[in-house]
Image 1: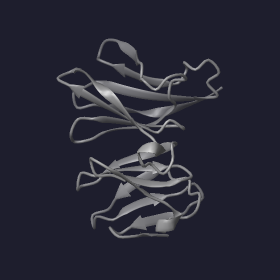
Image 2: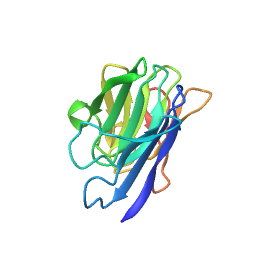
Image 3: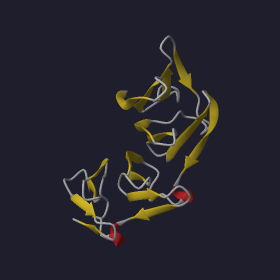
Image 4: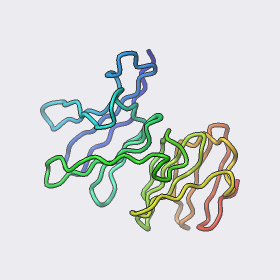
Length: 175
């Protein structure tokens, strides 16, 4: 098996979240999400069925939600209300994502959430609805996007696995 860390993130409440990805996960329980409260590590069961999701990135947005990008299982959102488990939401292509393998996550200054879908496109969430940008919107066909950045001028940038550097100026993608 090949183990790949899916990132670590310290939430604003001090909880440390860790994601892992194991390829292949022959027993369905080697990947997933764990959290450390300062004393104890706990495996977090996510209601997406078996196998546990392979986690590729973790990000906390200004509203306190934690977002987890996954290999082939879409994007997961965890809401924590007053320190208790508030609940999980899963977003997939059925909800408007370009693809179910998600990676880099960026919260833009306008509050929108941007998520890369490796091999499929870039996604933007305005808090209510997903918009998927694909090759028809100026991105390279099949780009294996993994990271997103926002520059001082507001432009969103991404880079594909083959070095395709792409810029969204608020209207269209260019590379």
